[in-house]
Image (cartoon, rainbow, N blue to C red; front, top):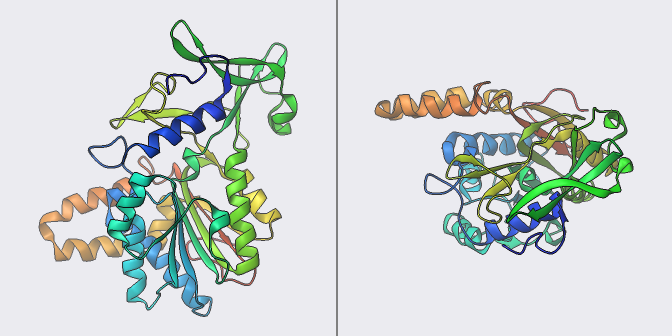
Length: 342
């Protein structure tokens, strides 16, 4: 990865894509020994609530045959917990389809879900049944383009090597048309991010749902834009790091703007629900009742379990920062935990 931007600058998006491709291909980054911990690794209750969400929706949809799909499923922890709960309701998918390119993570996933089939992209998913798609902390790792307002107008931020290290600097080519119209009058120095790679994945999923039937649940940290701001960040060993200091050896993410994802889903013919906060969704699905049951079964773990629940739902932890958005095919019921469809 040391050759990144060595000869000439690359966009932040290309830099992020190359760095994360190397990062995920060469390690299991999750857990205490890794660089970060996702909600399914914090508590089994997270995956169980997702499983209840799916089982409830499937029941009200008439119990059709369907395939469980997960995008970027990490170690397979969420899928294993969700599928276990779904089975208790008789909700057994016709197949488990995991969209994953990392060989290291594919191995970890198969150790938990032996029957899973792997795919490199959404386009490779089966087309014979409705799909129920889960994307937890997936979109945040997809590359973003960054544009900065300069005295000469908007320019795309480029990553260049100077003085032996990488820096993000304004490029030379005008980029006003790439910035959303609502943000073009931002102050000089403002940074705006766009995520065409995320939009393309959402479009592919929504097209599948509109054609095959089914639903999608996307959970990630972010906002409902448009909004200006530099949200690119790096994490290593559970601490924030310089995104440009060690390419390919740190986890690079950016906040997800749910507004453009919702718009492309609608244009593809699907129905959008939410976003709502992660805390509100988990409480609606019964995480407090599940906590009570787990604590009664293991009183010595009650404090630990309560701490896990609090981390997932409290507003000052993950509860408000993380959002959940659902996308459904026309004719499918409104998912539990969401208000009226948008």
